Amino acid sequence: MKFKAFLTDSGISLLEKRFLPALDKLGKLCHLYFTRDHFILLHNLLSGDGIQAIAQFRTAVLFDDYRISSQNDDRIAFSVDISLLLRAVRSSAAVWTGDGGSTDSSDHRLQIKLVKKLPANSTQPMPFLSFETKGHRSAVIQDVPISKPLSRSLVLELQTALDAAQSLPATLVQAPDMHKLQGFVDRMRNLGDSLNVTISKYGGIHLQISTTLLTLGAEFQNLLVIGDRAHQAPNDQSLSAQARLESALVKGDAQSVQVSVKHFAKSLHCHLVKPDCTFYGIGDLGSCLTVIFQFFVPGSRQTDKSISFHCRLPVQNSGAD
Image 1 (tube, helix red, strand yellow):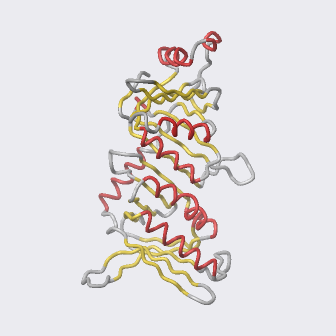
Image 2 (cartoon, rainbow, N blue to C red; image 1 turned 45 degrees about the vertical axis):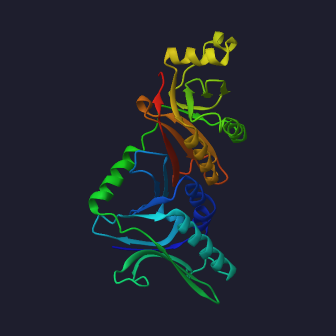
Image 3 (cartoon, rainbow, N blue to C red; image 1 turned 90 degrees about the vertical axis):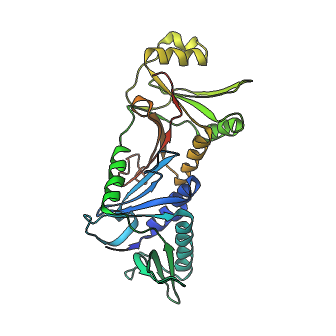
């Protein structure tokens, strides 16, 4: 199998400043998955525990002169330490930029490729993802160790998990102001381990954490709804937040799940990718809490379909629906 490409200026910026720092906050390992048309970063997709995150890019967004070949329908996947990958991209970009490089030039100076090399004190060649930075005055090669590329059956398993993770909740509600959301998380962080999250078709998000001594909640209303929606009864406006929540659940106009406070707090790190909009939704039958990050074509309100990113938080206990 072979892979070689040249990172573009925008590709370096997206990886170095946004997506790799966000994934680095979620965990140590990440799968890199290359196909003919897409480059995909997958965190925790083959595990049933913890947050799952999927960042998918059309190859033209990140690369020039993208070349891939394998006996597995030109698909290659492997795992890598995300912190090592981020460090290599950052240092390569620093060397290359400091030396006057630009991928807009015709000589394409920042190359990434798969290689096999013999490590020191070893008799067995090992796979690496190699970054080769060529400036006007210097050339630097950085090799990031990776796992052995996944077998055909494991790539199929990864693709199947990816396909299953693409389904969208029936109702998506736009996230409130992130400063308000972060403020609530900061207050509740040390109160307990579990958080109840309720999404309503009225455009509401209700967060609640309870202990034997107290209950702390936050209600966000009048948010944008995509998908299945409903109109709240006028009389409900005069009810308390808790009463409105219970009424929506009884009517089937809301769904509630319980997630880990730690996972929810971690998911907020995903905003390092600088999305234009964020939406929350609950999967079919309360299967997960899904967070979808939307990106616009620069200078417009049109969705950029060349980039997608979402994460899924496992559910501890499904509530009423």
